[in-house]
Image (cartoon, rainbow, N blue to C red):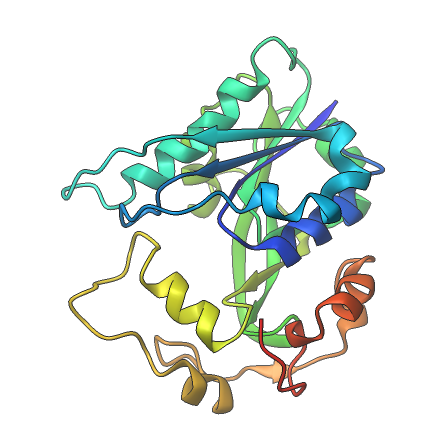
Length: 252
């Protein structure tokens, strides 16, 4: 069996793409949403607000809520790791030795063509994603190690994530990471709620960065590519949410 496990925070467009893309090959999706942000701000649960989108896929979805995340000023990623670890609790009594568990962020997509590789993985298999910023068609030259599969019980979710980001496993090509999508207003909201931002400083000028096709770190070299380079279901999602593609001028 294949279990696809993500933490969720209002990225409805990308979660829908995930359900569409993997429904035929994944046995269970685990979606974990918290009632706090990783900056310890209260938030309303978003997943239940979009049941009309999820309904065709809910027979394969395990939705988990977290009432409270830990807050440690000395460990800025503690809340994120705690939320991710709830994926493991969701699999208790369901997953068995030999099953494949994928740990990723909701915006990291593995190539469905590798489903057999995932089923047969005996260690940690890491996907080397093509990295996109701001839009699903604005490609960065930098690779990204994100989604990773491993046999059930081999790693905790946080450890599997740590090893994947460090490249400590078998790396295979194939996949897409859609970072910072959703438009300027969403990016400013996200800036104030993810773990690794210094909130004593103002948010970046995302409108300017998008116009100049630059990452907040200053990275350049981004360029537009056809969306048919992406997942099979991407075109269907773009039809529903055209602001995911550059040049439309639409907002979330």
